[in-house]
Length: 73
Image (tube, rainbow, N blue to C red; front, side, top):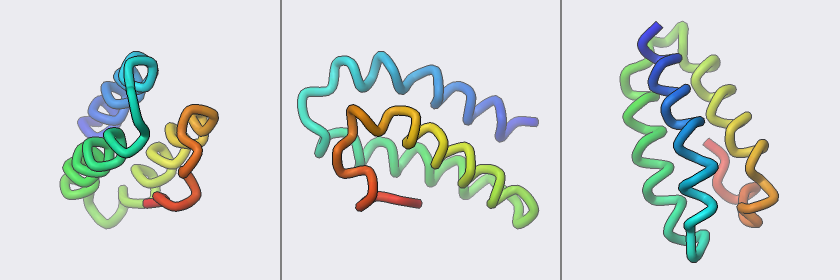
């Protein structure tokens, strides 16, 4: 599934991206833009799957993102 491949790429990007992040405010606009691209490609039947994967990524890295509860998809 193409959506899963794109989600996998985003998940692989997150650890090094977050490691080099200077401030959390730099993260959200980029993450939201990438997430929106994936969500825009998803059909109605895939939206919950995509949102679940994105949410899992964010929860996995929540220790580095203190404002996570304010940026849910």
